[in-house]
Image (cartoon, rainbow, N blue to C red; front, side, top):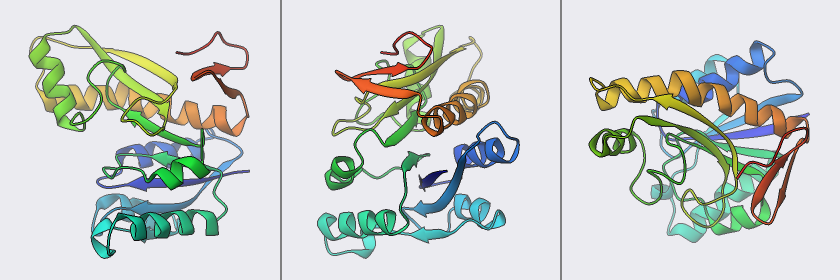
Length: 213
């Protein structure tokens, strides 16, 4: 059984997609062990509590420096014997000690086709605003492993989404979530639960598929 920690900072739409995937049988041999938020009062915590999932708030603001925060986050995840960490709208830089101890066991969902529209400053609506400003016709979402960079880890899955001339950032954000994020994040978790992913030379290899890069 794959034990999952989901890290959140906001409304938790991707958390909801994971919970729905488990309930509907699209994610098997996995369970959410805990939902950890970087701040209190966010709706993601209510979503988790409604499913009787353990929650906690571990905020950088509550600790004397990043090192103390990092140790607290790592300690909680280790205490619960978590196998996979899923970043679902988590807006805090992941501590390097966590990346070191959970190499290729931390995944993130990003609302663009990496390497486009990613890196420092690209999150939330900012991504979709940049897509529309550039005038590209195709965007999408990416699930990738987390490394020490920003959106630079090995890519697991991607899915493309059309951009329309009358799109607003909010409309495009919703389409990317519905047509890409909420589909490929559960798929990536299932691949991890089935032990079908290997990482070699910073590339992801999926059993039965050609490499993803």
